[in-house]
Length: 362
DNA sequence: TCTGGGGTCCTAGGACCC
DNA sequence: TCTGGGGTCCTAGGACCC
Image 1 (cartoon, rainbow, N blue to C red):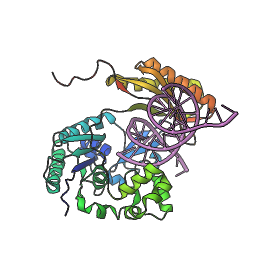
Image 2 (cartoon, rainbow, N blue to C red; image 1 turned 135 degrees about the vertical axis):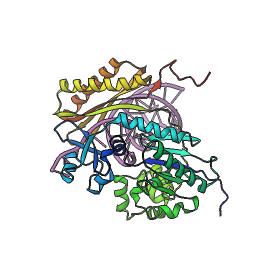
Image 3 (tube, rainbow, N blue to C red; image 1 turned 90 degrees about the horizontal axis):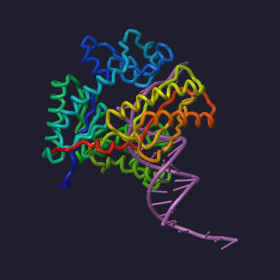
Image 4 (cartoon, rainbow, N blue to C red; image 1 turned 180 degrees about the horizontal axis):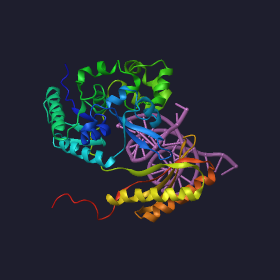
């Protein structure tokens, strides 16, 4: 038995969030397959599935598949467009509850968060009770279910929240971390995606336990120093990253699918102008300045390319976004005379405008 | 067979400075 | 004529996440 002081971290993951929000707003949807879609606007059903409820998943409708295919799988399902405003306001309700119950809340996305509760609870049994109370409070006050993972670090907490879904709770005490991870598929390790997964399969590694048996030397040789070291540590359930309040976003972008593939600058300028305006509105709302502008181009082969310009000093004008986006688009097409399918505009290196910093308290 | 949109983090090469 | 190493910034791209 170890007497070390362990951190205790909760990862809260809202179940099939967008679809569950729609079910809350429209109770008549409950029990039916619900599919939330991102329509590209190219034709009536072009676009992809963003998320779906469990009834739809049973029919094979998963995030990322084309909408038309989802309609073939389940012609009678309910298809709805993404309503981000609704999801954001419901997300705020959830985060308020979490904030009130932990020492540090790190909101990871609109539907996920880490809660640091070290010091707030005496141990993992109390943490489990707290997690149950949180689930109940979110169900009562917000009307949604979530899944929670409780573990000694963020990596394992996140894997644990995904272990039992929906409406799940998985507690992984420090002494069972290794045993918990060992049988899981390599792709379940957060940070291992398709590319790394395929390469590991090539090395004959299928589970996290098998990965943990490879030597650090072997892994760094294969994946480079940083990634190799990370894989070695992660496979053993080691993660020292801190739960930290996120200080706002690092970049703001908008991307869209063109009505049809084109390299016509006039068409592209029209689109980048609109995207620039959207980006500008988001910046305005949060009183942010930016120091770089990026034009994003996705060609018909889905290859993703970018062109970035760094400004001399932080700026905040709409014209600066628009003009740079146009200039970068023109430069890009001069260098790559290819038809584009999607284009985007992004600003980054964001800073709060001088004098706009929120005052703490008087 | 056809494939959205919003992000984060990391790497690597070249420019430039000391 | 040949001659270092380190640091930072910029840019492009890749991998991954939801």
